[in-house]
Figure 1 (cartoon, rainbow, N blue to C red):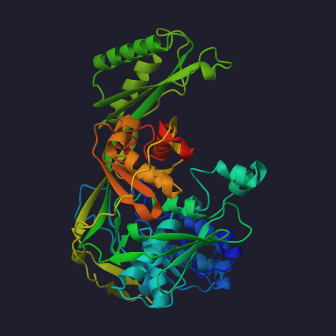
Figure 2 (figure 1 turned 90 degrees about the vertical axis):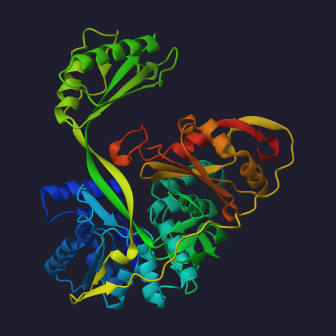
Figure 3 (figure 1 turned 180 degrees about the vertical axis):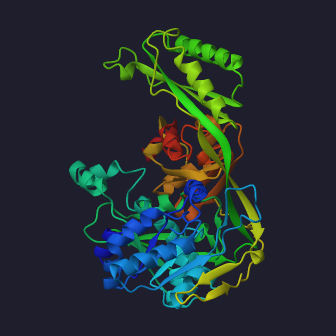
Length: 552
């Protein structure tokens, strides 16, 4: 927060504190203390930076209110009073729908930016929200600044795209970037290390027509180019229509242009009316989980794994109650003739889940530790299993937007209801984007996909998305025809039995794949080694296929 306030010109500072997993954590906090449920880190940041923000005339918009935006607003007023700083605080509420979903620990509708705009129009210096869309933190301030109406869809869509680029911070300035190693050749290895050691945060210069320039403060690390912005545009999106409560942004209309060093212009974005429903994120406690990782060293790895598994399964069968869900995974990290013991070792991971804490606690602990002197040679574990820990399950539901009361609580305490606005039902696009002609046949070489393509992946509940893009027209002609759904399933065998949907984004030279059900019940359930699919795109880039030599 201090970097952004002190680093250069800024009108509005936004902060995105919420994710599906965060909502579960805040829900558990609220069980312990009904007065909590908001992001406490925001208060610590504000204590350091509130004076600087007021001095520089920067307004702050953050969703740190989580499950209790009113409580956070009161805490901010108390903080400001203690610091002797005059500040006008407003908040947005109405997203909490637990009364409709009594089985859920948290149930929050994703609201748009209109409530934020109303608070800013009323003179708020700080606006705190609960569960709004990430992009609403930008659409709200932009609509307030320019006076956009709720049906100015192209302008709002441009702000949604800018908001989506900003929402994950330094992922737009070189963080988690597929081609980061190439910057070494471009800038030199030492300079690249300096750039990426501490990437700066992105900012958007938004114009009245909805176009924007993505950039960053001078003298901050990282870099902003068409590639970093493309990567973030593909992150955790699904189809070409990016539907939200303010507008449906057409991602297939986005045009990116490198305007100068660390400056990427975003324009051409078209918008359509939002859908008639609002998404509701539901978190519930799913039960308890535990895990133990057995270390298998040296020779006979498969036989050692088989012995450990047979012994544990036998012990679980004899126990008073067997865990409802038992999952094994052998991870072959071992190497032959290894120079260190760690390099000579593989990992056998056991994860158990059950509705009863003791069943995944004492049962597993006893079964695992009693084998310490009676199993495979070299028996040890990375850490002894402890008590079972609770895990969560994320689900998405949808409600009619007209039934959700979106309320802006202004600095003077007035409660203003925000109209639900115009909306329509989304229809299938009758004109899917045309693919380019295939690249002419020629010699190929077996090589990793990542030599020519970047990727960015993430989670949407139990689904994973993988966005893949290339940087030349010839590479796009090849990728668009080569990376079919069938080929993706071949390259990512974990997706073989799952529904995979491909979306084409020719303006970005990109494909976006949604792999349904890959993550089970969502990140909080930790059903997969990489529960948020963060590394899925890099796994795909590491897979080998026949690539035209002209592209290499």
